[in-house]
Every structure is written in C-alpha cells, then in structure tokens.
Length: 380
Image 1 (cartoon, rainbow, N blue to C red):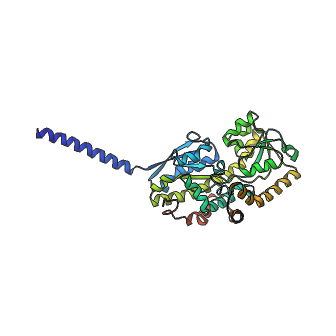
Image 2 (cartoon, rainbow, N blue to C red):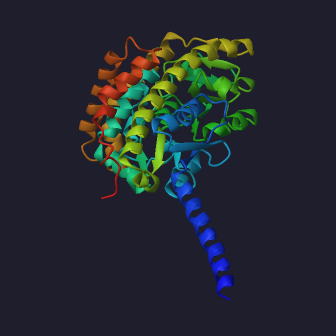
Image 3 (cartoon, one colour):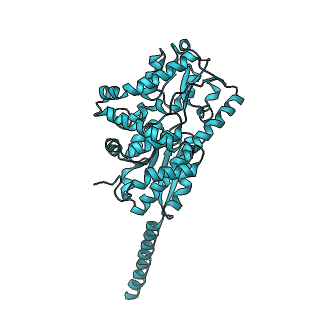
C-alpha cells in the first residue's frame, strides 16, 4: 500500500516538476509581438516593420520577437480600433481616417502641404506629437502609445488623362485622402473622394475616380501604374497623419523599463530607416513607372502658381478651420509651433536626405533621448 502510494507520489512529483519547469521555460521565452501593417508586403512602408522585426531581439536583449502580418490581419481603417482592442500589439496607424477622434494629432495632417520632403516632415511631426499633451491623450483614449511618424515623400497627381491646367482639374474625381487635399480639390472645382489607399486601384479601374493623390512610389507599391497613365508633377506636400509605430498600451505597460528603452531606441532608428528608404524608393519609382508606360507631365505656370498660393493661404487659415470644425483651443499657437518645427527640421536635415545613420542620430538627439522609458506612456 505504502509502496504504491510512494510510486504514485513519485509520479505526481515528477509531473509537477515537469509542469513547473515548463512554466518556467515559458516565462523565460521571448515575448512575441504581433505586428500589423494594412498593406501588401511589397509596400515601402512595410520596411518599417521588416526592419523592426529583424532588429527587435537585439534591441531587447533577446527578450522579444515579432510575428508579422502584412495585409492579412487588419486593414488601414481597422488598425486603430484593432490596436485598441489587442488584435495586434504594434501597427501602422493612419489617424487621418479618424479626424474627430484625433483632432489634435491631425493638425500635422492639415498642414501637409507645407512639406517639401518626407525626411524633414518625419522629424517635425514626431517632435510635435511627442511634445503635444492633447495629442498623446488621443492615443491613450485608443489604448495606444505613440512611437513616432514617418512622413511620405511629396505627393503628386495621378490621373487617367493628362492634367496640366486649371481647366483640367474641373470636374475631376480625385481620391484626396487628408483634409487639406480635400480642400485643394474642392477649391479647384474637382470632386474629392475618401477611398482608402488600398481601394484606389479598384476605384480607378472601375471609373469611380479618375485621379489620385499619392507619392510616386505608389505607382509601384500599389500597382497604380496599371490604371493611372499620367502623373502631374505638382508640389502637393507630404502625408503626415500616421503613427508608424503605435503600440497597444496594455502590452507597453507590461514591459520592463529595459524593454521599453530598447523599443524607443529601435523606433527612432526604424522611423529614420523607412523615411530614407521611402525617399530613395520614390526616386527609383519614377524610372520604373516610365518603363511601364506612365507619362510624367509638368503643370503649366498658372496651375503651379495657383497651387502654391493655395498652400500658403491654407496654412494661414488652418487654425480657424480647426477651431470651427473640431473646436481645437489655441489653434493659432499650435499651427505656429508646427511651422517652426518644420523650419527647424528643414535646416537640420538639409545634408542627410539619404544618410540613414545620420538621420537616426538626429532623431535620437532631438527627440527620443528626451523620452523617459520608465514613465512615458505608463498607466498612472
């Protein structure tokens, strides 16, 4: 009897020992982050996450790894609520799709036509939002932690027929995206549409729209060279209303200070990486698009001058628009702050447009080095 109990006890003890050892092993296993970009894996913005996934183990002393989802888990519109609800842990969040919920953060989007290149605006937007209490509160309300922005290269006008004059714009059905581009389209008698980026190909192929605003890269990234045969090289600013690395706040709060510090360093480098890659890809995309039969045309002087005048006037009136439409307080001061940051970063980045390491160091020095990993984004 006692012998049988002894044997049984030994078996139970062995099982418990195995269970405890298994649990201990799991506790020591790297934390797996589910990362999501609502774009196909060939898109330039995805390089932010292939870089992130590759560098994550080393950045966190081998305590974290990534599980990657590109265009398969959450689309662009689903990412913001999906991150809030924990469907993904980290993702590229386009807050331009939520102008009322991210009214403070979208100030940077409303001033997009100020942008002359994505490198400059990536620094300006990141510094603005990291130091904007009301902006960070918007991310908190969506259970997210903001970790930086990469702005797009300069927008151009894609179309199914050549557009070179003001008359050509009238009646054009344009996928416009952010608010400033909607205002630009309406100002010149076009009809704006708010299709998401991944809906543009179908929209143009079916005639729902006959024009689109995007960087030249999207002719290749989204295969738009198959449906848009003309590109008007108007200077239409940059797309800024995106958080390239938005992280679920619950996940962020469960990390150690060392892991958070590693992620902050990694996202500084990651934003710099994709910003430079995006600019370089934009240059290469023009040559590739020409080979695919796309014709690049120049706007006439009247259209160019009118667009520049619109951009200047729109920036000056942006504060009133934000106050009237979204009830933003002290909008004048906020617009002024962002415009000053844009000028600051234009000067800082004038010699580093293709130097990823130098740009990353600038981002760390001017922004990320001032963020405390033990307190930033933490639940009080």
